[in-house]
Length: 211
Image (cartoon, rainbow, N blue to C red; front, side):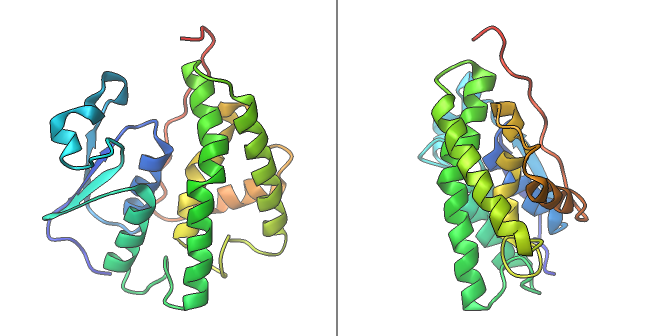
């Protein structure tokens, strides 16, 4: 395992599942890092200083020496390829890599459109969550089926695919998507939480005032 010359800086918002997956990967790899909190509620992601790091004004962003990278899935790929010399988290086998990329697409697609949007709608009191909740339930039914004969999403060990899918899945109940009917999914979450270096994402309470 190689290590950075100086701690990696992670720009994050603590309630962002996208930012949490980047922090989780840093911690699972045992890499030194420091956190800079970006308060999205105050609009700090739209300041000229932050936009110079990510022109799309989104967290997370990492700075590794003179290299700056945005997008949570891109960060997972970079960290795994740069610092996991054993290639445990992103194996060199092309078929395994293709399957990992498939799940990164799921994380950027249905997981975001479903559980992530439902959660944000519920905790902010903004928007209608029902369509996102339906997407999330359908997604979890399919993941539950996928986990019928396996412990991890890809291959026989955890990969960055599991990291990408974890945060918004674990916090789906905050978007009123319960997990009780998905025992294999909950067992998979528990396996991730048992990994050395696991760090939890803060829980949030649902909005009751609509503001």
